[in-house]
Image (cartoon, rainbow, N blue to C red; front, side, top):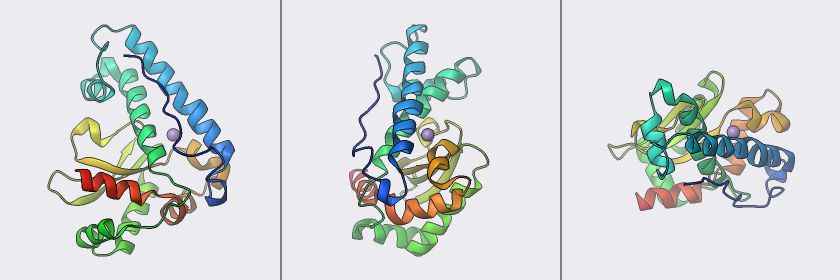
Length: 202
Ligand code: MN3
């Protein structure tokens, strides 16, 4: 199987008025994400055990294997970024009633959810990801992973929403201010409609 870069679900300039400029998206999607896909295809091409496997199968297979670290890193980054684009919207920030009810039930309030999510985004030392996950116990939770880490690899529930906190995700728009990037995501960019639909489908 040859993997391909998914199209952005919006025009590259669509989020410019909401804190993510076209230059950020062109670099992040067209250069960074494309590079992970290209590298993954090259690694699969050289490894018969990986040929014909789905992206999810490759991630689970490579997780924790020292000999497959580059495979895990590039496959995880491809999967994580593919979810990240879906986690963004030009009309983001609004939380549908069904998801709001679940957030209040599991975190106490929407504000407490946002505080926990922001804390995960800031608490991830170095590069990584902050996640809203539907846990295997049926409760929503916030997690963070380093580098290419992903809840998919550990079977740690279903990822509903993700924020990329690698510096390449925010340096053009927010320089070193990751806190402002996280606040802006939650207020203006987070596609809670998508998260609610994923929750409903779980
Ligand atoms: Mn990234």
